[in-house]
Image (cartoon, rainbow, N blue to C red):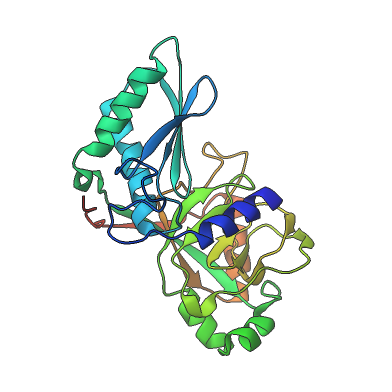
Length: 277
């Protein structure tokens, strides 16, 4: 967890300068927006400017989709993160040099073709009650009322930048600046599954019982991770989450439906924005 939080703080401090095509490190990419570097003997890391932003993360996921659509032989797995894409491959099928060349050719192409429909998962969330133990502190820190915090938090479609820390833990971007709040100085020893929290300029959901330092404002009855499901992890990086406020009675009703196998998360699709070169 310490490594994840350190990386998160480092990337939150990083910002790109100038135009969309100017890298954060002057000259670091040789005038390009992306570079490929080896990551062991069977992986390549495609690196973009270090920033937590929709602009950069869209390029990460756009590159991943383009790689999949081209069906490049030898690739075994793609792992997107905030501002990088790890590409695992079989060196006996395709060499590092050939794969690097093909990936760089994709990034040099028309990035606008990387757009796709925006898939939104509507996640029920019971704010406050027994789940939002930090909500009172948030009111004081943010100078907002409880209802204002809930209204702001549930009015955004949050992009899933990446999954990490725990199986199914979503790092969500798009948090309103009015809701930003530092993590706890001393993390809690145990946070319950489904807890919805805020850490710095991000919000997220704890999929499992675990230690954690994010400020808690609510809880969802939905299982973000269930090893007994055909797809254990509920969502994927690149999708979006919209929190839907519910009552405590709704929470337990949904939990009962989940246990009976009769509940399904509501989703919708919207046209995604076209990425510009």
